[in-house]
Length: 114
Image 1 (cartoon, rainbow, N blue to C red):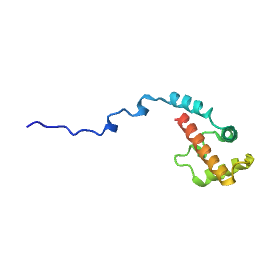
Image 2: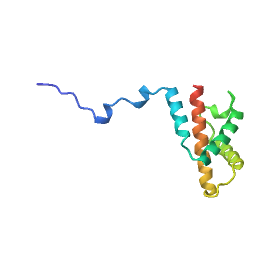
Image 3: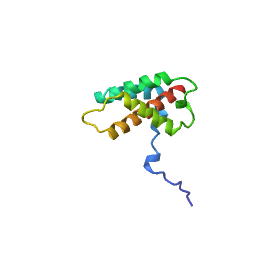
Image 4: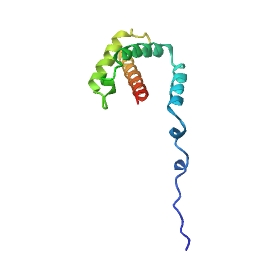
């Protein structure tokens, strides 16, 4: 009797994209796509980068294994106060956008440190 190997689902036969994608490729991709952000978002990122640059020391809580959620929310509120309210955006939407961009920037910095 012939033994038959179980077949794999099609998606398991493709290589994982991360295998052929090193960190410098990811960084250049991020930079490329960030150029396509709307102007308002680019302004937010500039403010976020400035604030994080001041905090960017080895002992900063942004590099803790599990950063405290409350501290990150407070930081996003500080950043939010530095950015004027957009005419076409309500404050909750702006707050959510700042939090997302802040977390993305922190993730990127943590990746660079590793």
